[in-house]
Length: 133
Image (cartoon, rainbow, N blue to C red; front, side, top):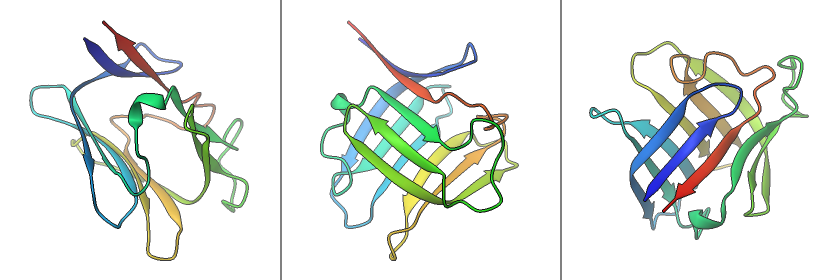
């Protein structure tokens, strides 16, 4: 069974070798590249009870440029009917490949990603979930 994320607008697929739901109070959704080249998805059950319903992850409000204020930018888990505002998007210069969505104690969501994983976000169409038997 193949489980992966397709980075829309590119030929890149992030194939999962591990998917883990963790029962913690903090809310998050993390994609991390492992040493063998596959990806690990870790998320909190407090945020999302079942990742199998997610069809895609999209960013809303970045179609043409990254706005100075983040008030009109949000992210969505298509299929799970979850859309949340993003307070920050933080690109990182690192060899480690990752995409993280984290919620702080005040309920503010931020996205952290490495530029080696997503070279640019403007016009980014999102991540589509691939499930093949």
